[in-house]
Amino acid sequence: MGVQVISRDGQPEYAVVPWDEYQRLIAAAAVNPVGASADVAASQPAADPVGAAPLAPPPGFERLRELREAQGLPLESLARAVGISPSYLSMIETGEREPDAAIRRSLAWELGVPGWSTRS
Image (cartoon, rainbow, N blue to C red; front, side, top):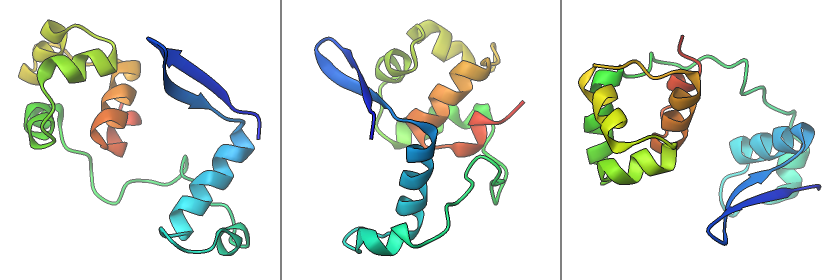
């Protein structure tokens, strides 16, 4: 597997993998619970996470502060992780600003809200 590791401040932060490897990892994670054999996952058909629709609509951005606080994330920490200023994140939380697609994807990743990454 050809993995590219991207570091920040000397610490690994992201791993970039080829698309087909990513698809295999997603399929393995979906059908291979912790402790199960990887051979079982390899025999399963690959899932298509990109085409899958969320079962329920994602929460609105008006719930962003509630979701962040529920995970114990300080405003400054989430803003830094997403790559925006704390004041801009505060404006998103209060509804003064609507996040663009890149910020939505980052917020979705950091808070585990998959619907935000595809919301228009």
